[in-house]
Image (cartoon, rainbow, N blue to C red; front, side):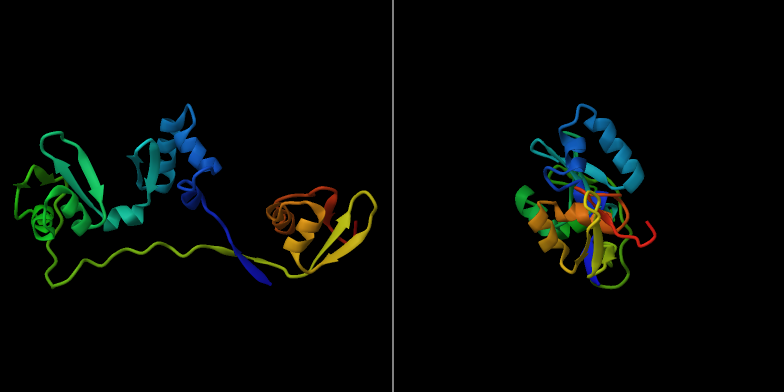
Length: 191
């Protein structure tokens, strides 16, 4: 058996050109699609240039929010050092803002105050869940629906290339998500 990774909507939403990415960016109902996606999977969308990028709940939990006093704009960032260099702040001053020790600093204030950790060191970071894998059998038996010919396949990718079929479609056939692909179906002795 070989294992292949399943792409989830959470992975697909930030992959340029995918069905989910198009719904969130190029669709006339993109705003409502983004709102529905956030209701279902959590997190939030942030705009970078013309593209909307989804930030997962785990990244949001590990990141920080500051608010600009002059524009009332909330800004999300994951690296204090990088954000500090861009805006002329130090990591220590950002920590003081986030912990509530300092109200404002250079036009920035905390949009949410975090509890101070009693021990030294960073807060424990949340981790992304492991990707799901599915098992694909190494030997598959297909039947040509036109001729009735039974074909034993040991390499699905090579078989797909020989017959001009996308391998993903054959994997769907093997996993039972498709009934047939280009005159091929799974062979069952009873049929």
